Length: 100
Image 1 (spheres, rainbow, N blue to C red):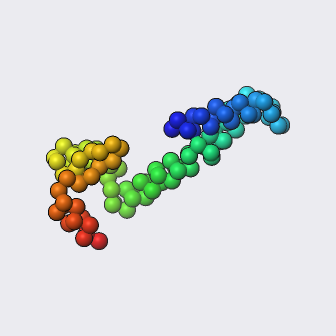
Image 2 (cartoon, rainbow, N blue to C red):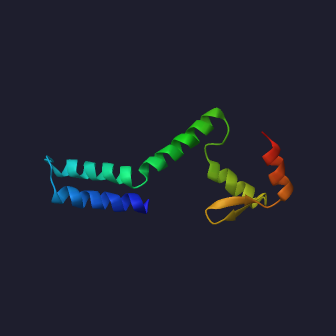
């Protein structure tokens, strides 16, 4: 998110320095936002949410996946490590690995 914000600010600065056919402040902000999304990782964020939406539509994951992961962590099936989760029990990990 910080990267998108930095690119948005940079895009606004560049578009203010070189106003190529831009007539209003609204269009400058719009172009700055477009540059921020394109170069700041916004496409990856959009792809992430589309993937989660498709998996939810197919019934593979619940819509509130974080709530499920936190619930499993509270029940000591998973352990939160940094920004992700790991299985605590090796047998549970192997069981889900063999389920295809």
